[in-house]
Image 1: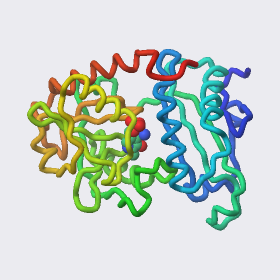
Image 2: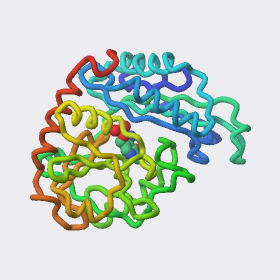
Image 3: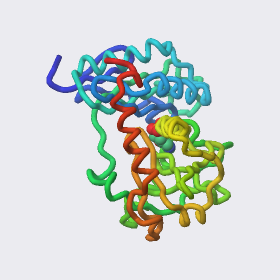
Image 4: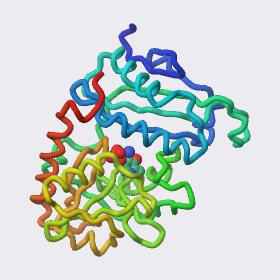
Amino acid sequence: MSSEPEVYIDGQYYPKSQAKISVFDHGFLYGDGVFEGIREYNGVVFKLKEHIDRLYHSATAITLNIRLTKEEMAKAVVETLRRNKMKDSYIRLVVSRGVGDLGLDPRKCPKPTVIVITGTISIRAGNATETGVTTMFSWVRRNTVDSTSAEVKSLNYLNSILAKIEANACGVDEALCLESNGFVAEGVGENVFIVKNGELLTPPSSVGALAGITAEVIAQLAAKLGIKLTVTNLTPFMVFTADEAFFTGTAMEVVPIREVNKRQIGTGKPGPVTKKLMAEFQKVIEDPTQGTKV
Ligand code: PMP
């Protein structure tokens, strides 16, 4: 093995600097493909099965026929981690439409490209769990569910990137995306929850949000802790008047939101429900039964 980490591409391993795909791959030319971001904690790939199930659902939604079975896909992830002897890594699993011609017709792409990258990710400030993050409602509306909906984890992330660009320009940490009717959908790569009178509320994926795996863990923890969770449309009013708010995501984990459009949420500090769920989430990610051993 070279000193560089290796990247899996279609069953072969390449050193990072040599890991390349064709410029004719429709993942590159058209954003035609699907992906997952997965974490490995202490030698266990967290919720690998759930991520692979979601990858195949995304693929089904865009009629992308992945040639590997789910078991083979899981093996490719685990084997790439083993080869790279990485710990506490972030895994990017990508399946693109594959190489075609310069037209967008997917029928011209006979074979999907499968890529597994293992690395690390850092998308929040180190003290974000203590201070919370600042955020704003973006002018960029989430795509409707009859468009390129964020329900599909596709390689089309410009919608999120435009919102992130706006957040950057406005000097806030993250953007909150609204859907076409003005209901709150999600962050750019996170789901959103609010707390009102000790109860949790979060939007349904029918507003054009991804069904988050971290959000599902939070739902299970809420049930265990006896915290009522309602999945319902959230308005900006409900967010502004919430007692607490937080983001969930594989990369972000669970992070309090302290400000929206310069307005303080609750006390502006991580609230008791958020803190409890962050602590419980930490226990779940440290639990080796919550994933697949490398
Ligand atoms: N929404 C979007 C648009 C995302 O990209 C992500 C990250 N995968 C999430 C929500 C959070 O999902 P998960 O908890 O499965 O990472």
